[in-house]
Length: 387
Image 1 (cartoon, rainbow, N blue to C red):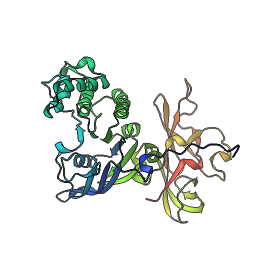
Image 2 (image 1 turned 45 degrees about the vertical axis):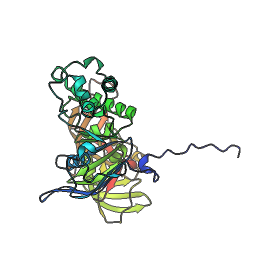
Image 3 (image 1 turned 45 degrees about the horizontal axis):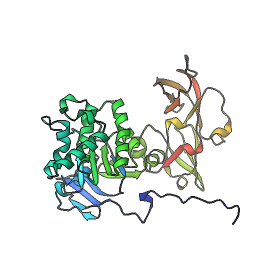
Image 4 (image 1 turned 120 degrees about the vertical axis):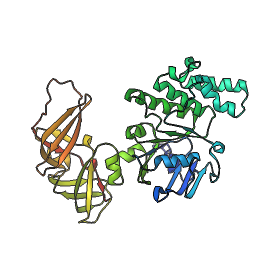
C-alpha cells in the first residue's frame, strides 16, 4: 500500500533467538571440594562466536567453572556440553578447547616462533603448514618482527600476545582465558582489550574469559555472567548489567552506586513511588517492576545520573512534587581530569556520590567544599531492587 514505510527486520542476538542452539551448554553443574561448594548448580548457555565473561571476586567460582570447561576439573554433579557433545570423561587434550593461562606459561628456552608452533608440532602437523600458520598468527598479533626473540627479550604485552597466538594457532573452537590481562599496566591493558576483541571478531572463535576486573568485562564482552559464592547472580549484556541490575549485589559490584532504602508508597503501571527517610525525599522510578505498597525496597542510582547545582532547579526536572530532589553539603571533591567526584552529605547523614564530566577547562571549580547544593535526578535514573 502506498505510503507505508518498509521496516527492517529486527536482528536478534543468538541468546534472544529461540531457534539458536547454544555452543556451550552448562546444565546444573556443581563442584565441591570436601565440604566446600565452589560452584553451586550453575546453568549457562553460551553461543558460537560470543565473547563471554565470567566476572566475580575471589572465591566466586569463576575459575573453577573455567577449569571444568577445560577438563582440568570434573563436575561433582551436572553436565557440560560443547558443540552438542557431552564432555563427561573427555580429557583436556581431546576437547575442542584451548586455554590461555594468566602466567602465559611460555617456554623460556624457545623462540617466539617455536613457542607458537609447539602445539602444532605435538600434533604432527607438516612443517610447511606449521610455518605458514605461525607466520599468519604472528602477523595477526603484530609480532612478525619478533619471531626469533625469546620471552625474556619481550615486554609484558608482547608476551601476552605470544601466549594468545600459541592458543589460537591450533584453531580451537573455544578459547578459555584466565585473567589474561592481569599482569599488564593500565594503559597497555586498555589497548590490549580492543586488540583481543578485534582478533576474536576476525577469527570467529568463541571466547570465554574469567576476570575480576569489571571494566575489562564491560569493554570486551558480548555478555557477562556475574558470579557470587558459586552461583550466578545475573547474566546479561554490559548495558543490562550496568543499567538494570537484578539485585543489590550486582548493583554494588558493577561500578559505583548510591543505594537508598525505603518503602513503596504507590505503584501506578510501571511507575513506583518510594518513601526514603535517608534520601530526604520521595523517589519516583519509571519502568520499575511493580511492588506492593509497604514493601521494603532499595533504590539504586548511578552517580553520573545525579545532577548537582548551587542554583535553583526547575521543579519539573526531576518528576515534580519534590520527588527525586534533595539537598546537601559538599564534603569531599576528587578531580580526576575527565570527571570530578563529589561526596555530598544529606541532612539525614547519608553520603551521596555524584560524578560530573569536566567539559570545559576551569581554573576555579563552580562548586567547592562546604557548598550547599541541590541534587536532582530523572525518574528513569533509578532502579528498584527487592533483594
